[in-house]
Image (cartoon, rainbow, N blue to C red; front, side):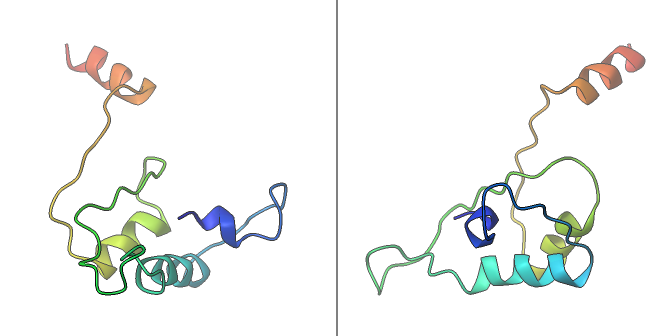
Length: 88
């Protein structure tokens, strides 16, 4: 599932801030039927959410809306290598 499916077109510009982002994330988490083909299915075991780094509206909204049991933080980015070079 992707927020991109909710947009009017692939080339449509998107400028969401504050409550608009929080509402979109809330709908994505709670209004999507995550059980798949089985209507009595258990739902999700794992939900992977790919976001840009930072502490913007989306990560803060997610932290307020759901209980997070763990995260996977990819460290092969330019920011990581810059940080690593400064630490050494």
